[in-house]
Length: 231
Ligand code: CA
Image 1 (tube, rainbow, N blue to C red):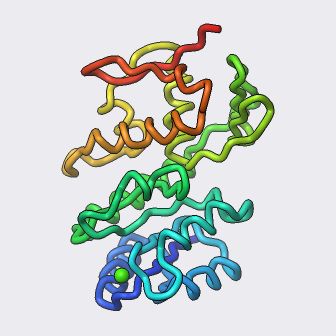
Image 2 (spheres, rainbow, N blue to C red):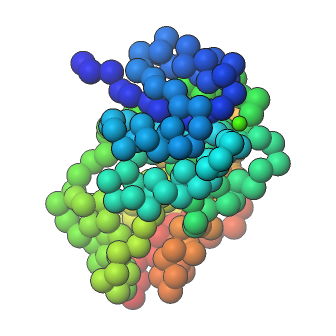
């Protein structure tokens, strides 16, 4: 089987090498770019299955690189995992303007990073195609095209937001806890500290994008979320 390719955009050579070493040991093929420009150049030339993107880069920073990836129709489906330093605004990173798929806070354990990468790639591989379009209110979800629109206007969701939305829809009104959503979408290993806040952050950005249809995602206090299909 062909190896999955990962682009690592990181200006700190030691960190880039540590990541590369661990991902290659886990069976992935890696390319390292030391600047945002070099990362974008690599993306224009080769196809990658995942991008690991440092936020703080000289020149074009990671946030800008992420924005350009998610605005590019040819690249926006490629999952982006941001490498952030403590204190960088996580809401912004996974939020509306950027649409990154996940993030890891430095210093991270290589083992955790590899598990997260595996989880994302597994999710991308396992994407089930449905040849149906769900219409509810002004919202339409096309499962075969992985597209969501409101009033016939396409809206761009980050892959985690799309998975959150469709996981809730498929639960057919049942309440899903944050832990269930984390498990279903992020697939974290039990050994990893589970951050249920991650779910809340993505729900918040998803609701912003759903605009008038945001109320379909109902918070069940102290437990989790459900999807409301009532007209
Ligand atoms: Ca850096």
